[in-house]
Image (cartoon, rainbow over all chains, first blue to last red):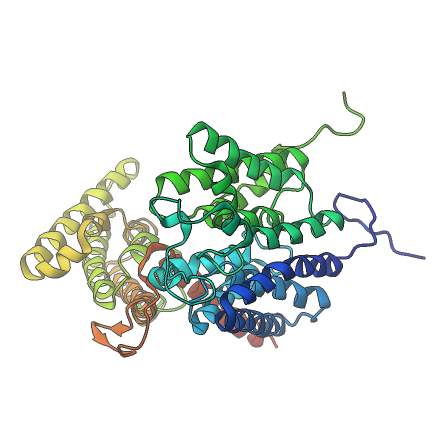
Length: 301
Length: 202
């Protein structure tokens, strides 16, 4: 006789396993990866390879220390963390910093909290936040695409005129490797929606809040949407199933909160970009949102 | 308990920082450099020794109901002495420790030892307890501040250790670095204790 399985909600069955969903995310990140390689060439190759390989090695060491079996889901999750971390840092970052970043992401942000499915904060963002706090100058040495000349990210320039909408949309501007091309990220996001790997509420609440706040404070909403890490943050980081709420109202609140914090940091803080910190701050509210922001329970009026 | 074991328990078995989790505020705040850590530990040990001696001496005449204000006055007096001595003889250290010297008065190690130990034990035992706890605090602060100074400034006690090619990780001298290092060290201690405890059972 089969043993009775007692598991927490939700009890809906799906063919999709964790490993399959993670493969979808990796596939969805491919266009952004290709864009990074196209725009930043050899630098991008080094950073992406370092990110992936060091993430695998640290994951294997962590699992070995915990005497846990190595599963396909573990390796794919480490690949996502390594690749995401590589895509949200500047292309001029030296390789050893990427190794430190993935170490913090995998060891501290993920396994110290209990491993896959137990981490409170998004590991790749923790890795990036650690690197920004440790080496602020090296982390903000942006490169111009194609010719590797130092430049400012459009968000950091006083007058955003130099970058046209088309340049921002295609990604032909200075910035973090995988963040510059909105087009590549949107293609990936479309694939995730097609596979139903992510749900619309959170990213669109996030982007919508950014647009509304831009309109209220009379800054260019299109520029705010297309620049910085907003696209990769909204579609790939704020949709991480582990660190974001599972309830529908919770997701809406999470997205709106991310949008507000992002715009407050962009307009009023010393950092040019606020996506990373906004998602990390809202990650901390996830247990609270899961507890209180519940939808109508089926059967109740 | 013998006098020796009153002293040695503070070093590892009941280490104030890693075992009792007391004195977290100075441990996190002043351990950016080893010299700051040593200065804080020495000043705290002075106050701890003084307060343990007095509290132990007056334990029989202290009314139970007002014992806590009494201890606080004793501790505050010694903290003031330490503050003035440091300002007179080590002005540079006094300046870099800043507000955390007057804050020794609320250091839980000192109040905790007064309440939990000195008020119930003999004078000689209380002196050994204060010295042991102070020494354990010193070792803990040296450990935390060494990691932070080496990684965050590439030096130890002000001497360059890792050379000019090392790119110091600024986060280690910032508050998040303190929490990271302390948490990982406590985890490491728990791992070691757990290992020796389980191997003792077999």
